[in-house]
Image 1 (tube, rainbow, N blue to C red):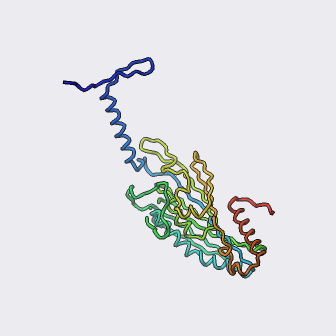
Image 2 (cartoon, one colour):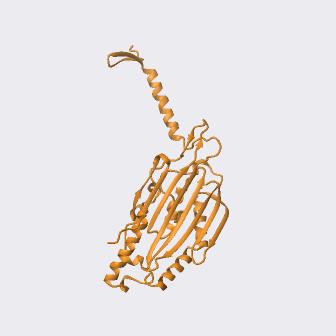
Image 3 (tube, helix red, strand yellow):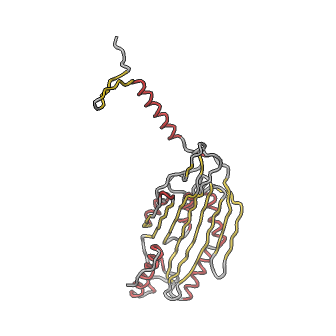
Length: 304
């Protein structure tokens, strides 16, 4: 009767070694069990509270051309009414729902002659760990607002303004979503971009501080991220051209977005293309595209 071989001789270089097959098989099975355990482990075991601070800051710009002083005034009034403190408060309330926060306090203010601000203090709701999703994937859109944050804040400020001479008017929104805990504010990104008429979006995401695991090891980030773009929905990626400036070793991520399509009618306030001569259309188009390029690249362009 043939017996199963329990060892084999292996030649490596000039040496010859007797290898125990059962020992090798046991090591392979042990490694596989460890790998399965790593894949199943979704939650980092921490010593105490998660002290990481995650902040998403971005500027959203809406650009338009208002030919007359009256049109410019009407544009500012329209923007001021469309994005007043009450509307901004509702937007931030939806953001709190998306990231699962309990609103502790709200301060909001409309300004004279224009502009508005809202600040919310928030706290995390009790959650089951599996309900928290920090995966590098898009968050929900406005029509799918669902739940999860920690003691932190949401702020939004608006800045309507217009050029005194050339008819260009700009509406800027500054938004900060800052969390201290397990959840990343990037979950709210899709909703916020779809909540405003955005020609240009400039975003920064940073993770600061550190948290410790149960063995005392420091962790300076607790979720995977290669780019803010990975948290955007497909329709957003298709509509905008984007550039990244990321400092991975510092956990700093920066993305700029500029709307790809340009239809002059979409940028005229109080009039249409038919109200302009061919020469005026070319000049207004040049002014608008110059304004957007200067904001996108963060510098004044030379006149040509």
